[in-house]
Image (cartoon, rainbow, N blue to C red; front, side, top):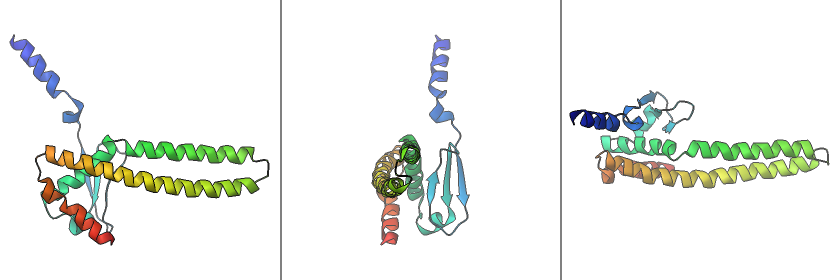
Length: 161
């Protein structure tokens, strides 16, 4: 019976979320930012300007880190890359089948460029809202004060004005 309990304990603790090692990078730059990248999985980057300008408490840092983790959890980078790839393929196909020897391509490519920027802006705002929501949940689950943590959002919004 004790062997069964040990097997259960091994099963519970041998889970990717608890065994994955995360690396945090502090980048010395005057540009305030925090981000994740699919190119370097399990890595979170925060700039010194972000720390010095907006993050005053552990609660605020926890929310920024939770927000960035949320982008990976929600697959935001993957979705953005898929949309950009699809539009890029459309551009290449158009260039290869354009019977007007480029005239139509110029007009359509300009339209596709505008469409890409518009889709990226809408997609980006939606992704940020989703990451904010999940980031707050992650912060709360990690037992940080989400009300105090949310001050970081207000400071960043005030800076944008």
